[in-house]
Length: 185
Ligand SMILES: Cc1cc2nc3c(=O)[nH]c(=O)nc-3n(C[C@H](O)[C@H](O)[C@H](O)COP(=O)(O)OP(=O)(O)OC[C@H]3O[C@@H](n4cnc5c(N)ncnc54)[C@H](O)[C@@H]3O)c2cc1C
Image (cartoon, rainbow, N blue to C red; front, side, top):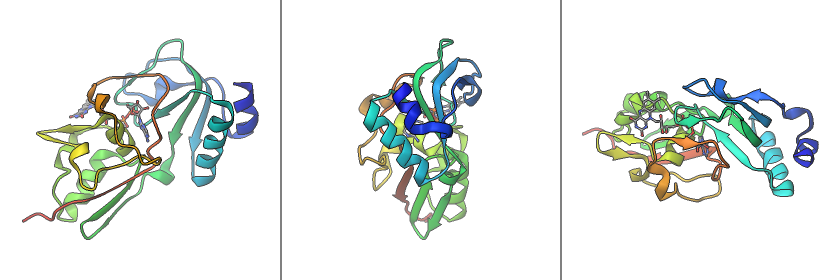
């Protein structure tokens, strides 16, 4: 932990209560917490993890996370507003990992695209949806084409259908996601 803290230096905070970032508002602190404001922070976090092997917990909008009272022994990261953009260009949709699903649903509907209507009622982020394979009303994230991928190119794990994620080390970070939707008839 000390080695990771030495790499992250003043960018990381210690003792941040993670429950504040979740729907349930319960749970203890992380040893280290880093809000990622842009590519430089992303790069810094990757370097700290690669060099030290510190366990990482990615926090989205916290709507499917239950943090233990004891907190998280490792580095908790959260994407900031720089990763919340949604760009709709024709049938091409690009959304940051921190973009809110209801915003994505409204923006695609306004662009006369179908396929993400279910997301309007899901209080999560795009990154959380990719990780958890969020869905509803017979649709799910993994059915989008092209399939949303994480920054390391991997697909959401099959086990991601569980409705509650425990605060343990995360899979790869999803910073952006891209899909193309058919226009409404
Ligand atoms: C009132 C309510 C209604 C809901 N309705 C639905 C529903 O209709 N359908 C449905 O599928 N779910 C539903 N959910 C569950 C939840 O909203 C979804 O699972 C959502 O996808 C979680 O996203 P999040 O950003 O909140 O993720 P979090 O809860 O923050 O995290 C969940 C998991 O995703 C990982 N994660 C988060 N962001 C990233 C990222 N950027 N990169 C990599 N991993 C990441 C976390 O590490 C964790 O493992 C509901 C939840 C609530 C509270």
